[in-house]
Every structure is written in structure tokens, then in C-alpha cells.
Length: 169
Image 1 (cartoon, one colour):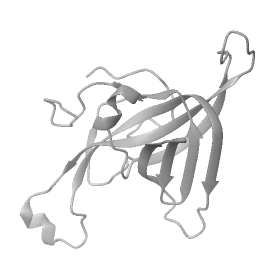
Image 2 (cartoon, one colour; image 1 turned 90 degrees about the vertical axis):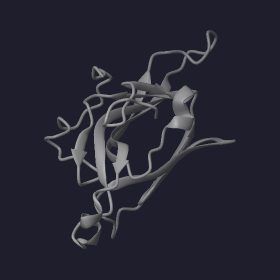
Image 3 (cartoon, helix red, strand yellow; image 1 turned 180 degrees about the horizontal axis):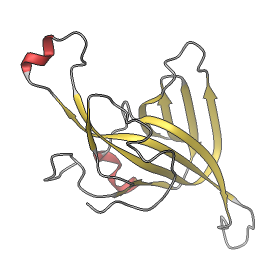
Image 4 (cartoon, one colour; image 1 turned 90 degrees about the horizontal axis):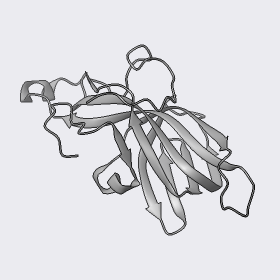
């Protein structure tokens, strides 16, 4: 992400055209939903299409702290700029979700989102999601907040939301 802002966010709306510049490692999923749209898949086919909608905290920038803090075992090695965002995959088909949170951390942390020959793959700490989709749109709802954690508090992020209203950068 090329930007002049300290928080690392260059624009409020990103799409599959920006995929190479994005990275979801350690992004936290707060919720997800599968929504039906009334948009027909083709003019001659009249069925509802799915949208996969994810409410997440996206790390816009990893910050290496001053060297003196690296020795503090109570702290991680990085600080973060984190922003709440809505990630929507459009025209989702062949959705396959696997999840096992038994013995997990309680957080749904994304390891990575990749494109495969079969479609999209969202790999997580305790979950795995595979599907086909025409593309995605990720909208940042608030400016990034500087944090010692990879996720925000619920109050910091404005609660749960799948709003598509973009913040002004």
C-alpha cells in the first residue's frame, strides 16, 4: 500500500484490482454473513446470488517499536495501525466453510486470503473458507487506530458492522 499517511491507508475502498497490494495476515474477523442479492447471474437465469460479507479489523501497517521495548517480554514485537473494514465477495458460488474453535484462542484470525485456480481461499487460525466469486470490495469504515494489539476493542471499532459507508481519507 503506497501512502503518505502514517497509518498506511491510501484510500478507503479497495477491490480485486488492488489484490497484489493487500495482505490480510492476522486480520481479525468479528463476524460474517452470507447474503442473497436480487441481482440475476445472467439475463436468462433468474436465481439469487450470494454475497459473503465479512466484518474485520484490517492491519494497515505493522510498526516496529523502539529497540528498548523489544526486550520487554510482556509486549509483542510490533505495534499496529488497525482499521475496521467490510469485505464483500460478490456472486459467491460453491461456498465451503470449515470451522473448529475448540481449544482455540477465541479470535478468528485470518492467516491469508489467496486466489487459486478453483477460486478464493480464506485460511484462518481455526477456520477454512473456499469459494468462487467474481471479485471483492473492501471498504474501510473508520480511520486506522494505533494499537499494541492486532485487533481493536469493540467500542473502538464502533461495534459490529457490515456498513459499506467509506471513511474519508
